[in-house]
Length: 278
Length: 278
Image (tube, rainbow over the protein chains, first blue to last red):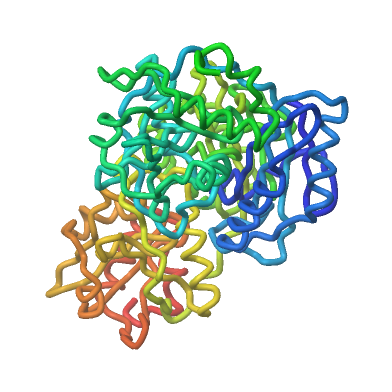
């Protein structure tokens, strides 16, 4: 992993063993798709990071310096994945945050994940997402629920899983938001009580004229089409959830064409394999 | 901060920027009171760590090696605080845990916190603890709720705060469990849905013949006495919660005498300041 670590404005050799990110998951992160050295959705990712930093009262580093460090990792014009991690920084023992602490931030470079084949195979995760409005929506680093749910999926040999909250309503997949199609209208669940408000979800809401509505599990299983989305892999059609299967659907193909116009990394080249409609 | 960092059995110079503790709070910790170089409650702390590691499926390092590294930090016979942090280790990007990863563990040495004066001043925290049975009881590193609650206390200028769950039941303080006295009987709330099952709480349950029962806020305010406890500071009498005040109570003094027999670090010397009964 190629990474640069900073404490405030200063590049450092290593993360302190007393970093609060390590101690308490006291931080935020963004993961974005880099297209030929460029960061098409940088502004959206930075806006969400700033929202999370305001919510948690974590100091933001200088936006220009972070972007420069991020772009430097892809100066050769490659495509890939950029991860940006921001923590409250190193501190003394104990939960009390110290406003004087310089935040720690790390930019790191990762390869693109493989393109999905003929659609994802999902399961219903047993792990539930706790209801916590104070942390909902932002992409914070308290992700043990997602780690446990992802481990379930690995054990079951499926691509991903759908997560429900403690009331049984559908929230998201482990690594993406979920959209379902009913009567030619897209629906995606609200994220005020748990879950992450994804950058790709936000980009799609208006162009798809999607409704944000509570999503019971039955409304996924009865949907005409289902896709997951995130800012690294774009739109991922769902082919199977338990016993339910879905053939490729033209509305998903249409959503992918829209997304390709919003981010050149999600261009039709990447869609051709599993999308007979384009 | 004096600290030693290990990856599996190997001591390393620094924590990897790709450590999953940093990325997801994917780890566990223990904080314990060291008395003249000795770790009286080591076995209890290790047992809880092992329980958490089993729950999260994190590999445990060799118990003997960890204890040796911990004791080496206090080889001069000082008293103080030892923190032990265990994470799933460094991994590739994404939530999926890799069973092959060597765990990261860090032992660090910290000063003893100041002894409490004439009893703690508390508030009711606005931050609620989410209900998450999969993570309840263990001392994992997803602690943003505690960080937010602790920040509330600092802003309000109080010593600590009581946390309620999403149903309004009392769970704990930000840095300790809570016991309340009613009709000469101690009660402490259950921790199956949220909260941390403290080592000091566990040590006190039997000798105090405490009942584990749901604790509504009113039952704290109407209590004859209230104390917080943790494995670093022992028993901390509560003097005030909002408008409610409590004078020193002989039953709290009695509990402190019991605790002093269970851990020499909590000896009467430390109790004399605020406890007129001993």
